[in-house]
Length: 337
Ligand SMILES: *[C@@H]1O[C@H](CO)[C@@H](O)[C@H](O)[C@H]1NC(C)=O
Image (tube, rainbow, N blue to C red; front, side, top):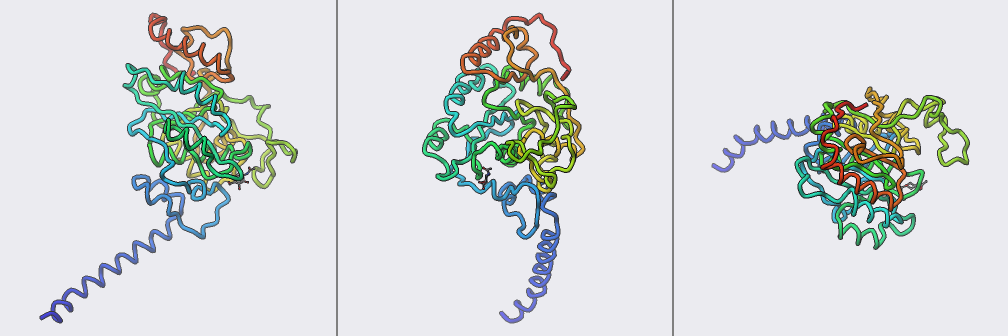
């Protein structure tokens, strides 16, 4: 009896294993880049990658190699994830940001948003005790597997974008720096209600054509070789003080980053990737330098203000709070311009 039933089952087993082998071969033949898009619903499989594929772009597998215990908190259903490039030794700036614009107003949670500070490791001793303590206390620090240095800023931003896309899947990402003020009263509401752009969005403050030359002086901290970038001028790109990307653009940029060699200026690199992915950059006056003339009602328009010290962050915060009630008769400007 036993022998017969085994023989009957065997053809089934043969068919199943044939099907499994086909699936395996198909998966091995799929290029890494499209895996990112197809596997986004299965984040755990993302990190497997396929070894032996030579790539001149960003090595995401290596960047993402971190202990899961150190992962920050991540909220689902976010309108916007705010990624703030910081450095291990900028604890005071992070503290000031947590007390000002990153401090959530309880009545304003209808458009969820979240702040993540992007930090690398100390060259010798990995993730420092201080950073681990900060991470445990606030859950808003994302440490990547790269050495924190100026020339590694590009790795920092790519790691942050990739981690956010994989773990949080926000509708938009704002990338900014730790010397900036983000109008968190207005930004999530603007993106969700007024902005009117859900896909293909890459917006910020742009550099003029004459100010995008590639620096070929090897001693400069912005030096880029001709092998890494052939042209003499970068394509139009948004300044790293603040730019907004829609979720689809984040994915298209990450895909391009797998093959395009990085340059040390993260914002220029995002411009190169956007061009490669066919995403045009949009100029917006809502990203600007700090100016003593910004008044309360400007906080119903501005999204990111840069170059602020800690005392100025507090002034900006007070103005943002006043703008909640003042200026309500000011006409809402709905365009990105
Ligand atoms: C960038 O990070 C990588 C990985 O940690 C490291 O090997 C490299 O030395 C860093 N580069 C600089 C210029 O710090």
